[in-house]
Image 1 (cartoon, rainbow, N blue to C red):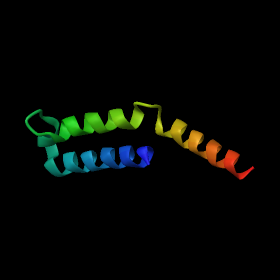
Image 2 (image 1 turned 135 degrees about the horizontal axis):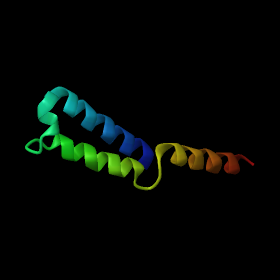
Image 3 (image 1 turned 60 degrees about the vertical axis):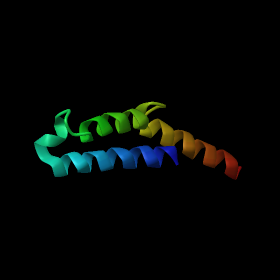
Amino acid sequence: MILYSAERATQMALDAIQILGGNGYINEFPAGRLLRDAKLYEIGAGTSEIRRMLIGRELFNETR
């Protein structure tokens, strides 16, 4: 759930920056800060690929 939420937050922040255009990058709009925060959530506890590998390993171990 954390992986999904972090990836969706990053995508939403990227969409906001796309909608705002150049204004999305300046500090007067919160979209840039939201993207930095969302990306930190996404990679803070390991990359998405590592998280997927761990989830897959755990699911595989449960099926044995």
